[in-house]
Image (cartoon, rainbow, N blue to C red):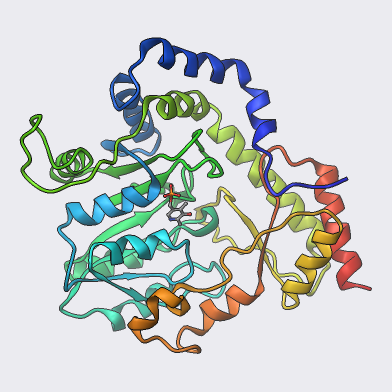
Length: 368
Ligand SMILES: *Cc1c(COP(=O)(O)O)cnc(C)c1O
């Protein structure tokens, strides 16, 4: 039986009535952009993430962009981040004319290595963007400490980590700003693009709110140049309906991860995910490390088991960043990791027998 990488249809069918009802209410109201539904979602997500303010925006990428804009980051500025992430993390920095400065990752968690940050700070550095990769928080304590010492802002890229916890604190609530994505395949996914900026800072909240509607507080009065980055009401309605299930879905991803871990224990060639005991990992992705990754992926594919690579090329080696002047070998942990990682199906609806089928296929390949 074939195993898809993710099955959103299965999830939809399990809550179809609620979702259809929520969407139909919005259609009946004909209030599609921002409005009361978006306001309600902002409050509910802020509560959930244990933070004062949530600002609904058009995508996770825009959440990053607007956060940087709210901090007045642009030409001549540098922002420290990880090269082992989705492109949007660095792309949003470059979009504003600022320069991403890449710091290598921790070989176990694949998150930014805090010990390597201090060396990269210059007079131009304005902020650090740690990414909570695959649903596990980056090591925030040392990052916040370095930031405080050097007067830098911290923007958490929590696009993969809604509901994850670091030492009991919610992902996205620790830095000066936190960014969420509601892309359909994220742990809390809408039915289109969507995102949210989180902050405890009233000034930053006001700024982001203004920037998402063309820098305007009073209609047709523009105090700064912003963008059109509004969240729409259909997304808010779907997300409100789904928010009730996020803990349950995250828990079942964790259970699925436990099952993989135990099924894979005796396979010396497979490195299972490392999770710090102080972290509550929500397994946006379940990622194993395998030296012979590409051939294994192909073998699984032939056996109708779908897997993914997050991410095959670290950002410092992307064509669009040649101008930054990085060489191969400069960020060795990211480069090695990019060659070895393989994400297995981990969505909450994947069944035990599917997981067993996947592991058996991995064994067939590796122990042949
Ligand atoms: C998904 C993602 C984003 C961007 O979110 P979009 O909603 O797709 O724009 C940013 N950073 C990371 C780490 C992501 O996984």
